[in-house]
Image 1 (cartoon, one colour):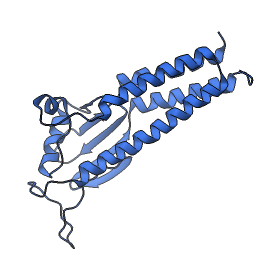
Image 2 (cartoon, helix red, strand yellow):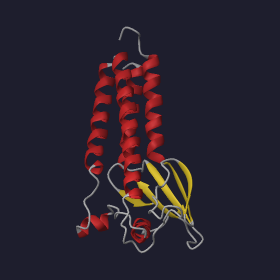
Image 3 (cartoon, one colour):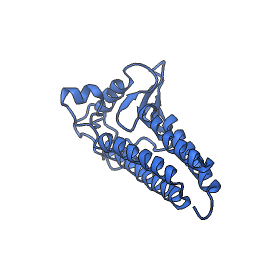
Length: 205
């Protein structure tokens, strides 16, 4: 089998890591917490980022300022909230991309390699936009009867509590960090390998 075919198949199979490793990680640091709180965002769930029970502790903090409950395993089990729709269709999309990548690798056509990378890029951009929309919704749709309220000193309106989609932001007494996690780097690795396969593939393939 040609080198480009093998590399294409390996590159697409790297997406299998997304079923194990998180895509993104949000970390909260505050004086009252000796250890930071962390939230890992996977393609199919949320998980504790730094220590045990982080998701539930962050959900409790969110409740104080009036944010919606997070779809943690515990909240979903209690029936308090439905899981994110993304947690249902993202694993399917990733599975389809893996299958397509393997098929394209077996076919060994240069054009198909480019199509695969293009599809992954579009899906990645849609995913980032969806993540941004999710953060905006959770940070803006606050319960006006919440225990702790942030109000604009000039207008008296309730202020939004939007974590950054990327980078650092100071929120009340918390320092919030939002960065890609291991899963995102596996995606980058897949793109690099498939781009290499495209480069190595014969022009008339």
